[in-house]
Length: 314
Image (cartoon, rainbow, N blue to C red; front, side):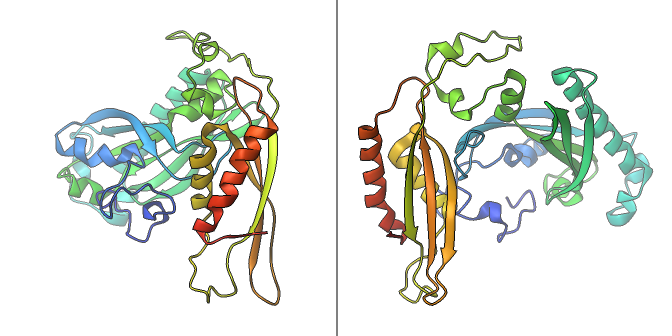
């Protein structure tokens, strides 16, 4: 985080979003964590892939463990020679900076053409990341809608300085591998990447893009749970409700049987100030039918555990 100029109060560093092992040790949240490490070692261009972990919502496209790819390229020193003595706004407005931007965009547009075909529509949006300046997101038009596929930008001057490469200029990008695979192979649920069912694995071959054929027709089981999240202005000394804590609690009780969680109702009592939330939990297995009895057992366990979050069941 420090090497990437991510400030201490950034949401990405908060325990609400990140899995901390100790106060100073955490599970990797992005492959950008290795950017300065590889730059310090003297590498000028690299791809870095790895597993990352984030506390997040529960639905078909989010999972607490997934995979990212980070790409970095430092430009030829001779091409950037005129930019050696400039920085800040002067650098951002320079022809050399625009040269790096063009190289970045042409490279990533070429990647999208390779994956989705040369006729793929693409568009760039300005974005913000602490470790790149300027920053962009790339979207493609796929199946009738615009979809964000990656974030990128010109490596921030301070990041290069921290990495002992202040004499160089370059770009970086990061993308989610599961997200791209779900688009390319038409995989509807991210949980399938973790299944051991051969009906899933046997459909694919190395080097080929094959559309996934669904084999699961098992129906979902829906259960609702409602609770108060605080008493007035927290005058009872209880802790504030954190939604990601609730999602993690559900995962710890039901694991991958949870397909989706939706907030279907919320309100604040006008007199007491107490807040109420009602969630609908969709349980579904990829390989078998679930019974009401087994889901009821999980739901009762969840209800028993909810008070540990400072919640009062309704």
